[in-house]
Amino acid sequence: MAKKIIVIGAGPGGLAAAMLLASKGYNVEIYEKQSFVGGRNGSVTMDGYTFDIGPTFLSMPEIAEELFEASGRNLHDYVDLKELSVMYELIFTDKKVQMYKDPEQLSREIERHYPGNSEGYKRFMNDTRKKMTRLKPILQSPMDRYYQYISWKVLRALPQLSLGKSLYSVLSDYFTDHELRLAFTFQSKYLGMSPWECPGAFSILSFMEHEYGIFHPIGGLNQLSKAMEKVVKEHGGVIHLGEGVRKLWIEDGNVVKGIMTEDGEKIEADEVIINGDFAHVMSNLVEDGVLKKYSKEKLKKKKYSCSTFMIYLGVDKQYDLPHHSILFAEDYKRNVEEITETYTLSGDPSIYIQNACVTDPTLAPTGHSTLYILAPVPNNISGIDWSENEQTFRELVLDLVERKAGLENIRDHIMVEKIISPHHWESEFNIYEGATFNLGHQLTQMMALRPHNKFEELEHCWLVGGGTHPGSGLPTILESARISTNMLMNEDPSYSFMEGQTAMEEAL
Image (cartoon, rainbow, N blue to C red; front, side, top):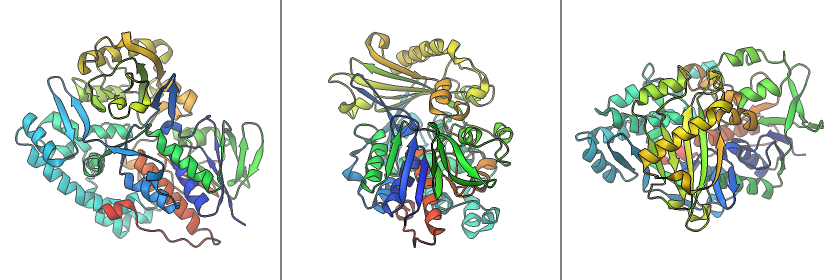
């Protein structure tokens, strides 16, 4: 008889794990507190306007393709992917820089704005391609034992980890201009970190975009979650929406027997996979005294990512704006320090804008468009009272969007609006301290020093998502699901499993 697997949370990590396991014959059930799948990779719909809640593009689609293939399906039967020729436009004080996917076009754009730096771009790509080759075995394998640090795959990778160097410092080896360095380091925001703090190994983030491209699924990135939901169900998996988990059912000290739902029902399982926000789950779903390494007191001492202030606008016009734009603060370093060190609200925040309807008219009524506006801000450890600051900060962000991105009189065109502040991330999405990108990615919280895929403090308990190895970001979250499910199946005497090649192996 097939083992019963309960997955807590229908985010992309939980859906990917459920999809893989259901396709192999396991009895899989997902319990999700929200009324929709995807978590932060879900969608908001208001009066005919559709918005992605969190991530807005897919990079390294090969990983998703492989997960579907391993589940006996073809991703492209479910999702219509469109590659963007201009990945994003960078808006600085005195210039707008188009970041093209095509290397020759990008080289010309770099020379136009930053003469003499196109050679550095080519060196960066060539060097980081080698770095990816060395790092990929670490990103695709369990890292839950300290002895693995002296394994051959880690020793080979050590020279590529840029130990002791920040991401900004690594990019300084390639580019002479500060703005151009920011163009290849702002991706550290995907981890909720400062490029002056983020480990240099994460230069692979911008490399992945430039090497593999950026894709928009028609209907939004939420379509990936909905596609995985379909595959789970096609393989007999069950998804319980609007049914949250109140506690893990634990006996004999640390043995997970199943879950207790918010309705008070006890449901038994052979294995439980947790896709909830790690610190929130361990602080709320586990009784005090059970955990030692990740007790409430110790979790408070961990380092967490920044948060985000979100404005979703449905407007009655279309703007001449690229699909993705990034508006840099005039003093970007100061803005980052405000977010990650002094925990203060900036008077000049950096802002990301998605104008998805320029690619995908299905997201809004004819002639209208959706604008997704994000400003990185401190997480709730800052003590900022968002009930007092929300409207003031909204006005500041909209003023900057009007002035820097040229979206004149934007308030006159708003038909629908939704705001998600750090307070909402914590209270409505169960994100610890509103830290949108989970635990920080300092070297002290990576690999074996991150919560393990096979959770070390509880029996029959597995982790997927940004709070475990290999970390935050959609491609790595999908990898976490593959790592955890492979481990689970390999340890199951009733299942004979051999892992195939991965996307990174084939691509590199």
